[in-house]
Length: 130
Image 1 (cartoon, rainbow, N blue to C red):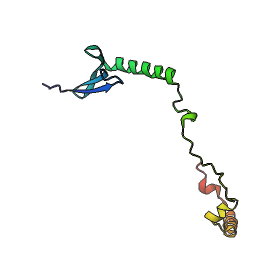
Image 2 (image 1 turned 90 degrees about the horizontal axis):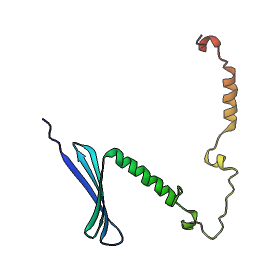
Image 3 (image 1 turned 90 degrees about the vertical axis):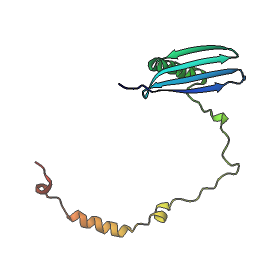
Image 4 (image 1 turned 135 degrees about the vertical axis):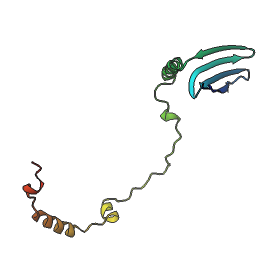
């Protein structure tokens, strides 16, 4: 015989008016969410809805689609962002020789290595898998 453990997690979200709330409750039985309860509360009145997991996911997809209609898919607008650029123009440094400054390479030794490795020809008998 197995004992079923039940755990409820509730969130009560207060809206702008103190007497208006949204309450979301998840009912977990033996480690699996089986029931989701939604409630709209105003003063002494309330509307309560219970859904299983599949119904809740359908409801969530509808809410998400409605959000896209109301807000749009682009949530950040460029006009709303603060201006981070400074008013003074930036001076660019000459970066034409940056590779030699950061990664100095002796090209003569590279050419010698290339010439030496050019002499080592591959023997098809050594590498041919067929």
